[in-house]
Amino acid sequence: MSTIKSIKSITPDVVLIGAGIMSATLGILLKKLNPAFTISIFERLDRVTAESSDAWNNAGTGHSAFCELNYTPQKADGSVEITKAIKIAESFEVSKEFWAYLVENKIIESPEEFIRHIPHMSFVWGNENVDYLKKRYEALTAHHLFEGMKYSEDNAEIESWVPLIMDGRDPNEAVAATRMELGTDVNFGALTRTIFDYLEKQEGVNLYLNHEVEDFKHESDGSWTIAIKNLGTRKSQKVRTPFVFIGAGGGSLPLLEKSGIPEGKGFGGFPVSGQWLVCNKPEIVERHQAKVYGKAAVGSPPMSVPHLDTRVIDGKKALLFGPYAGFSTKFLKNGSYLDLPRSIKLNNIKPMLAAGIHNIPLTKYLIDQVRQSPEDRLAALKDYMPEARLEDWDLEKAGQRVQVIKKDKKEGGVLEFGTEMVTASDGSLAALLGASPGASTSVSIMLDLIHRCYAKETQSAEWKQQLKKLIPSFGTSLAKDAKLAAKTRAWTTEVLKLSASKKEEEIHA
Image (cartoon, rainbow, N blue to C red; front, side):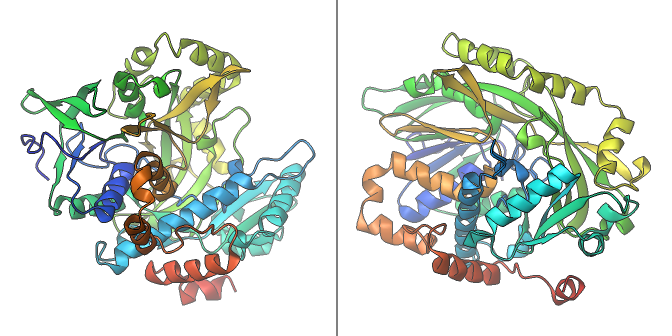
């Protein structure tokens, strides 16, 4: 991928801003729906996936709500709400369908390049948390998307699943765990690079690295004129297009503000940084084969839910614990400390101030996290791995996330955890704000965008037929159709090679 080149097409049909998983997914979907589309992709850095989609910046869980406790809150009456978990589980199945299509059609040569089977587990301790996890298990397993989930309060059984978590633990402590064999580890960086490699070979698709969007102008005919600077030559050019997608991760909010669309007024952003502890001892790494999520600390953001993760990054197995949250005024890992103050406008200052007042405990939590010593971080790790030693772990910087702040009639402004799609009324521009579980549900998010921005085309028989090829369950709810969900899972598990090995089956039989 050349990092410095002049812009070939000044009138592309589609402009994608940001070279992450969202732009890659939208780009390939649109090219499959209309091969005649010309697409220009602009990325300010010198490589794709350098921000949120990068393997070290992304949890890579393949968020399917099997283990993430923040997707299943406990209600005031003690019951567990599973609506969000069902939606996320269904969305991840849709992502796997599309990825299976890419594998079957040789767009991706080998699924092991980006996705692997890794069991997903939740682990808690203390009587109150054990009671919650049991209720969660009972609520989830009543739905077919969570069929096969196991629950245990037996120390020996849990130890057979995750020995590192039980080694050295008080045998009298009340503990519980759930295990979903159908879990995955996804390297979204590798997936994104593969898709962009394919797109670059297609007629009419151009990827421009080291190019930064400076400004937008909405023309009278509904099209957009975009001023773009080549950061290598420092020269600017203008591109005109009928459709723009802003998929720049934390950088999406400032660009949305520059677009000036009324639908973008009132949105703000709250940046949250992160760090991981990465195990440097192969003999320890080999003893853990799962993604294990616990409960978030009181006052912490959902993206800070602690987890002890098996990861496979560029073919090498790794063990990560975290993330440890922090605060930075940057909106991107490679951003500016002025990102937050520059994002404050007259139209969003009230929601941002209101959200700040309502989230003082969160601010205090983040400050405390920033001030943590190595010993503090080790103490948090020991909750999940009692015999952990500091010298076996290295601290690595994770990605930067920007949580959405939006207007609220009652509260003035609220902090949202998740993603938010903002689209112009005429469908000519769309921007994606927010964070988790974005990457894992990227296909569903981009399908929603296509329905909003290409409403007429999606009603055509041609596009409907093509969407059915790309996503076989298209038009049907996997959350409502148990038989179709089972059939779809069987197909994607086979194509993506997500079955447990015979050795793993024997260990956990």
